[in-house]
Image (cartoon, rainbow, N blue to C red; front, top):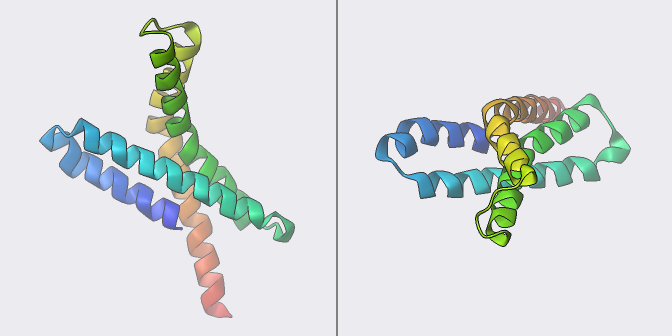
Length: 127
C-alpha cells in the first residue's frame, strides 16, 4: 500500500510541480525513490510467499511493475557511461523499456499495489 501511495504522490508531484517548474533532477530523484520503494514492496511480498494469497501476488507483481522502469533506466545509463556515450542496441532497448515502462507499467503497478495494500489493510481492520 505504501508503494502505491508513494507512486501516486510521485505522479502528483510530477504533474503539478516538477514539470511546471522544469525540475528534471528532482523528478529523477523522485523516480529513483519510487523504484526503491517498489523493490521494497517486491521483497516484502516475496517474504510472504508461504502464506500465498491473491493479495501477495498482486503486491509482488505490482512492485515489480513499479521497479522495472527504474532499474532499466539505471542500467541503461550506467552502460551508456561505460561505452563513452555511444549507444548500442542494448542501451537503446533498456532506455526504451524505461520510457515505455514509466508510461504504462508504473501506473499499473501503482494500482496493483494500492489494491493489494488496501485489501490487506481492510482485512486487518476486520480482525
